[in-house]
Image (tube, rainbow, N blue to C red; front, side, top):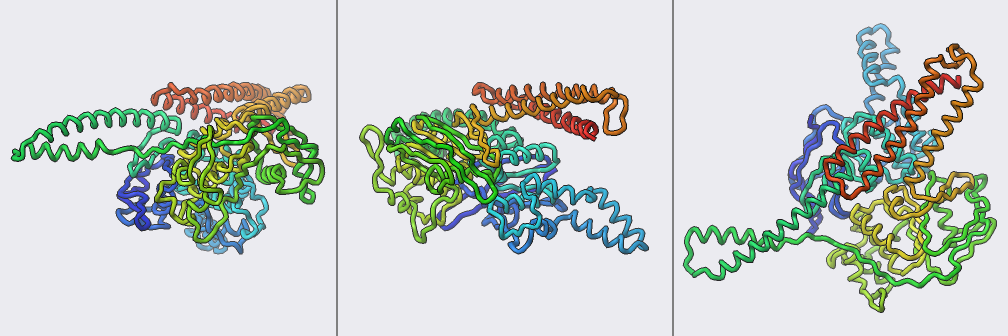
Length: 623
């Protein structure tokens, strides 16, 4: 069933054409991601689809009677309301049904009105709405329902808007970078939520694991052409590579045909027949195709940097707190050459504070930070480029000099450097305030790297960057010979570039984990299973009468089921990890990826079903 159709929409700003005459449709149960480079108009497409903006051509048609919700990158919320009031002032159908039911209860004489209201409550499961919204807000770490919107951070506002969108239970949910400002635990919860909910999705996101695990279709906007891939992100990567190879072969054939036709054209007499006129027209089309060149940008970063000495960065029993909230508690660590550390932890556990202390932007309350003489930090913060009215892109770079030194005594001009960062000569003279969010981040990243740091600190560098830029950044960081610290909620990015993790647990507890994020998740899952097994063993010793089902005890058959669930879940978790690792095989074809995706979904669904039953039995056991 078609829910929404986009027909021949276009958008431009002056001479800048973002896209023109693009069309696609969204059917029920599809989970589609739109992929395109920064500045291609992804957010504009979402705004047009949701009705927040208009197209210069074409139209967007929505099926009659369906609910559409749109999660913007920067939600527009009433600052004077509290979190709970924001939930209750939305245009949510469930709230209208609850209001109608309460009105019907006040007028018990009108039996028809009451019956209709009761049936509506049943149909939408509105009885549990309070539980639903509190659970979702809790999962999104918005537990203080009386907090005013005006006091919330940008990330908290985004999460509140996400809660509203989910509670609205729309037929179609449009999402613009839904994982921005979510910590890893929340992202994984959102993945599980979308997996179990019957909801149609259309999103823009740079989170490649999220794409892999949530989406079943990818639409790519490339040079104003739309390409559709019926699979997840892994499938898209394989199929896109095949498409580019086919295009390269066709391009070569076209060039050879062009050369042949060019020779024929040169030999033609001035008087031409109707037949030759047709061939001349064909030649014009061949010439056009033969001269098409894919606008591919390859960022090659060979920046010069000072060698690190034997002493790099030493943290001697450092402590930091804000009032009663402990951030660091006598943390001790010495960095060595080539260290690549990822930092993970819930929001508010002190990750950014830790980075500020390292770069001496904040003082410690105890201990000492010792920085080596040859260390030059490059610090990419979440704040980005400071706004300066009337500043152009090229001016931002020239603040650091007209030329940047490269290896082997070479140098590169500011203009050339910007071109390598995907800013063409025309774009370099645009005003910074006209850039998209992703373009501003890319420019800011450029200003950090051109200073030739040998110790890079990146605080959420992947937010708002398109996948093309992420691949470029990853390639650079893999070759970067200095030290690297990264705070990121992008699991794909972390897996690719870090060797070990600092896990911020809160209350000053920081664990050093020897592996990347996927290694950490496997370890954490095994810990949960081990704890379950220990709990089961403990129960076996203390519970003698398994047949007694009163007083929170399990029957004999339930106890057997409980123990078997433990084993089944562990085996399924292990099988899930093996399957996920298979996706990294570069030799997989599209069919194999589709089969693996189907098998992975089946295993994930089974784990969820068995875990739910385990919790059900566990609650009886604990009762």
